[in-house]
Image 1 (spheres, helix red, strand yellow):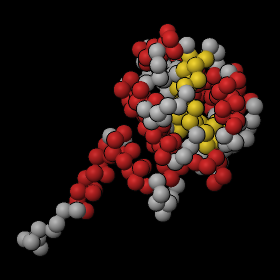
Image 2 (cartoon, rainbow, N blue to C red; image 1 turned 90 degrees about the horizontal axis):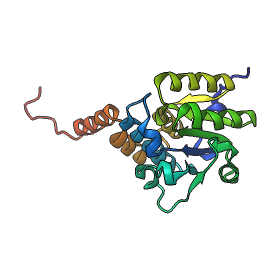
Image 3 (spheres, one colour; image 1 turned 30 degrees about the vertical axis):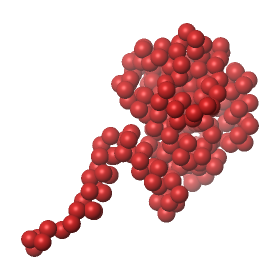
Image 4 (cartoon, rainbow, N blue to C red; image 1 turned 120 degrees about the vertical axis):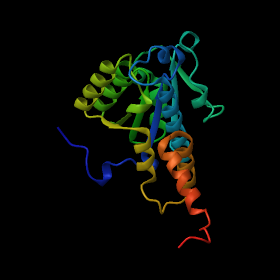
Length: 217
């Protein structure tokens, strides 16, 4: 087994491409591994991070006329972008999706979707077998049960996939706070989507901008 380690293995925005799979009402209705509110929040945050860092993002659904449209919180991040609707359960068997990914020229494939054990695991395992460097964003994904989600993660790790959370992905894309071109957008993402971390950031800004009392000793 080859290990994914070393500086070159970390995610780089210029080499990343994101595929968001089946974030649809039907799948959300039977999501039992996570709080559904958090999956909507986290998948939206991941989409916004990708846009902020210039990472190409492919949106795909499965039989949307029955399963529902991709969450508007996600599609609103990419106004006017086509959502590729499939019949294949396995996204990586859909030629249109694969061609869209290959057209970006990127090598670091990042995947999140519903459900983990089916619509995330299948394309991840197939793409790994074809030589792609695949990262799965676990908290922007979810399964029909805690067991289903966790077993799928174990299965994908065994196949060679990398596991991360949305904030870890965004932080790895940022990498260095001296890279100021995206720092403000990342800070806003923290405020809007990172709950306690975002509130702590706002509190820090409040303290930094609070005048010292004249009675302070």
